[in-house]
Image (cartoon, rainbow, N blue to C red; front, side, top):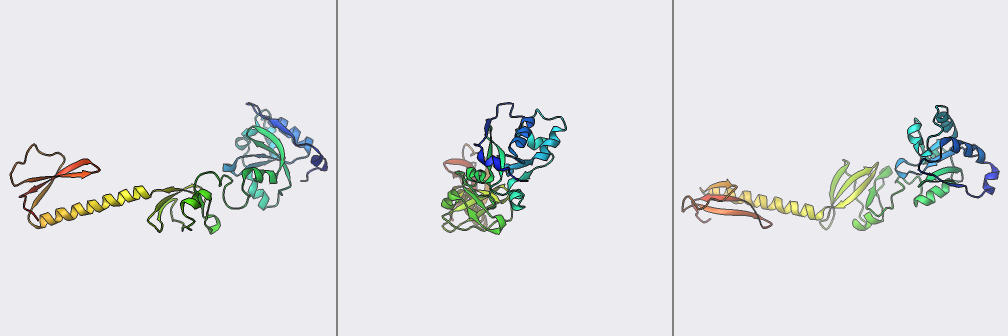
Length: 260
């Protein structure tokens, strides 16, 4: 599997893929013409699937020569991500491939694919890592955060949770939700305000229970009501409105009306 010397003397070959796509028959012809053994579909989420010349020949033998290159992932029984081929030294970064990216077919070295992605292959994080969203990763047991996440977390190293979704409260009272969206990659969401509201509600719920318990301990009868009666049935009854954020959630009828 060598790249023929004449390839380095050629200008980069590019072909615009139309709606129907460059066919697999055309691709195979170009692979032989340029002495190239592999075709790559630029797809970070799939790890950049790579297909060998032999795989494409196998598909053509099934009568699929007029199908588009973009259909290779469904036509082939398997494919190998670019990173795996690099780790196994099947490919090197100087190797040239036919690359399909954004409907554009061209010959590029593997190193150019790395440059296009803006991240080096083999770091343990996906190639869309530097998107303008807060991502963190614990790949290979090491915590890392992209620029957005580092700003959001103030550069703090966060221990990984046991589940695919977990909460972490950091120094200063801020709380963050981590949701796994890709193997070892988590999206970070600042839920400090929501958690603060939840704690506030829990606190006042506890205050209400303590208040009712104290009343009952002093011999008062306390009854929960969804609606206030037109007027107190007994002059000793006291109706208390339970209000949260200016909304009346219900009422308490306190029997006797004695002060505590």
